[in-house]
Length: 112
Length: 115
Image (cartoon, rainbow over all chains, first blue to last red; front, side, top):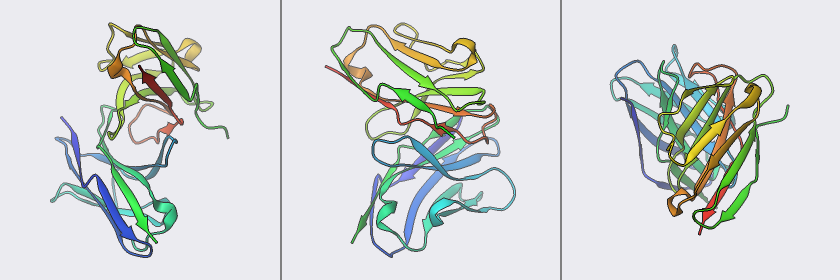
């Protein structure tokens, strides 16, 4: 069975500060890992994904995430937050069974 | 390229009434998903189609929910009768193929309120 835990349902940072959203997963097989973003009243949009290969994955809008197998983590970071980054972020894990399990989400707020 | 289209965007009904949601996936996408997203939670898969075949409906409450994807394109999700606990956002997504590493493209969702 697979599962995802997102630490912190709400994270608030100042504009220009580092963004760090935490995600830990559980999987009995090599996982595929994803970060999605959801803006108010919109569907989810893929930020980045890890399948195989390089463990540091770069995505859209300046975000990146690092797959750490030993820590079963896939934390999302951005060096400098922008007001437009305010949204809900979802970590997800998938397997060869073609099913993706989403975490419960982290709401990111940006302080001016 | 047009994205995933869903209608209606919002729906308010009384309990025990029926309701239907419609989804038009991205052209050429063989795989279609219906998810339910409760307030403050991530999406949960209800059903997945490969072309017109439902290949994973294990999480679909079959006593009241039904879905179809005629001709392997548009899809409809129905609830009859609706219950208060069905209030949620219903998301449709599509992907080029079924393998999990193919990106899923999500529609804006239908927000259902059952009173």
